[in-house]
Length: 310
Image 1 (cartoon, rainbow, N blue to C red):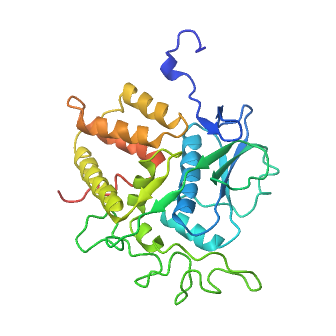
Image 2 (image 1 turned 90 degrees about the vertical axis):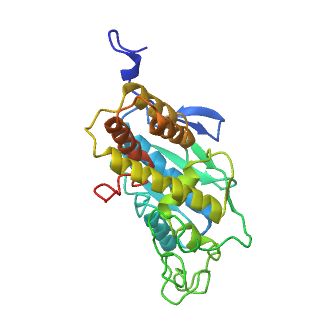
Image 3 (image 1 turned 45 degrees about the vertical axis):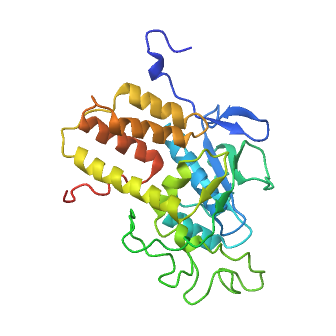
């Protein structure tokens, strides 16, 4: 019960996640103050692994916004260097190098972010991430010239599309690509990897648009739609920034936090942004501050075009 004399809107927010071990929602922040470890599990260079890493990153950002200290590690049997490079491309916070680093820092709990069917070691809640399926077809491949993009980034590895972290001239999955001497190479990178990472912010937006428990179906058209929406929002944010600043309305802030604190409901967060974009009586300065505030979680670089010419 909120303290007497204080509005429930100012009660300390609690991020809750669905624990796959029990099927019940649990607080993501520990009951006693201490460090929370987020452990992401990835089995290879594929779209589902990217979604797992992104989910871990979003959880980290949400916990940090509530004042919870967090650190993250990556558990992957193969191609860790390439997965880390892909994570960097996607604006995912860096992973630490070992699980023992926090042993003396008072780690209070661990949360495991995994694809379906992964073996999880250790105690703590488990967040399951549904798979990503790339729809192959004649339309698949790099976006055509002139298609809307948010970053215009070249496919990782350069024009050859060798993928993130792969040495020059070494194709994904080839012997020696990201594999230490004497170790068995991991599975080859998914063939759509260069397309997926050509516009990282558009991929983030596309993945955030689907509930974590539902499979995502991606193709070039879906990524193009996400890139177009991102470009529109960035232009809008740049325009709103020219108006006097106004605070994020309390009701809007409450809706945003209610969404992301409800098992990381990112589609709900995006719905709030869409409603703010079109709300007739909201000052442009408040729209700007709302988008910048939400971007602390989404990391879509929504303010990238500030100062650009109209």
